[in-house]
Length: 591
Image (cartoon, rainbow, N blue to C red; front, top):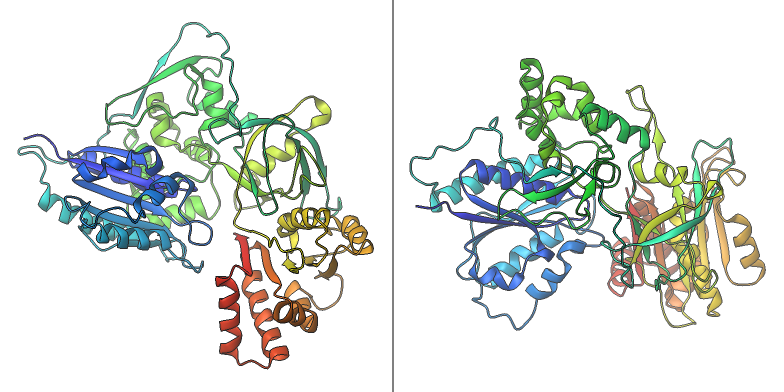
């Protein structure tokens, strides 16, 4: 009797759902199943009717949207023409990854679960709703969910007779095998597609990189500009620019030393098994070790539990093996959190902490150990109508102390900050994608924008675009610590106020005894806001850090409705809900 086949399909935005899908894939291999793990959009969805056993692992992004790599699948699955019993032969399960601090918690997983049932699929277990806010993180839900999933699945799809499952510490075969070349291949010429895509980004020259916070201010924020001449990129207010950062040169060097790799050597990859998805499209074939380590492997991220799970299979030193097994077990997650997540220890630092195990590592396992560097998104802070052929962004450079000796640095912001166009040509491969904010077409509709800190970026784009189109009803609430230290674009706002293109309301929280934030200014401007929203149908926007600010601004806005509109608390909430439904209230927040 041959082994049963499991298909694991994932929709992942930041890599967590992909990591979980790969973990399920490894568990299936240990249970002697044939398994394939694939992104939903690289899978031919028409084949779903002939599959017998599938697990869907999906994240939720933005305001309850599916991740980018499952959008095509999503559109197909929700076609009205699909017959109600199309998936009646399918046994499946849905696992969602979400964060309950967002209103549309695990919206995609819930909706997918419902839709699969409507199409006749048989659900093996209830939908799993993992939550970043859980005391044990997402694993607090994933671990028990997987136990019930395997109990049910193995009762229906038992392993072949006489084959015992593999133990956790047994090494699984790598997904790919490296073949090193003796000589350096000829340089390949790359053909650019238009418009640029994640696989074929546009190499945009970085032409401007300047600090916009006062030298004495603790936070380094950069105004960065790219030249997109000849790229065919079009964008409008609210859109985002995407890019993949590179690892720092000293990290690349240390990694190659630890693993005894020669950066200038070239290799090709072959999948070890026909069920393995093809070699990652972003890796050229042949590829240099330097490209792999600098631009592909995420060596400076805080490693996930799966990293320790794979690493443990190489450990021969007893002390190191016990620690790695603890970190990869359900019981050891508190210890792992204290060792890795709390101090923000990187994967590279972990390798240095486990020298005996690192010395045993086989290069063939690099793509099993390290995830791919994920693209970062920045709200575009300029308009093509005011800055033709340019994209501008505001970047807060992430750098802070943890209990570790070396300061922690954000990979992308530190990389961007280090690029200096005055020292020679610098190109950043990028592409543009639709953002979650959209602005009204009607020239008479006023727009109210609340954007403290770098949250002002999409609103600078909107104000430039709208002013160029003759739309003058723009109100901006901007907040920062001090007028003299981090008042981004201050002189530009003053010019636009003088030209009658906008109203500016500022909150400099540390420039007086008591702290004043944007939500206080919203309450103070109750008459203006009520007039714009209730009488002139204004749109209201919030962008910025998702800690307390968005909720505080919403509360302030509801107080405005109560005070000026004579409403009860419930009525004010209903008015805000109705605005959100009509897209007259929109927010773009990040944590």
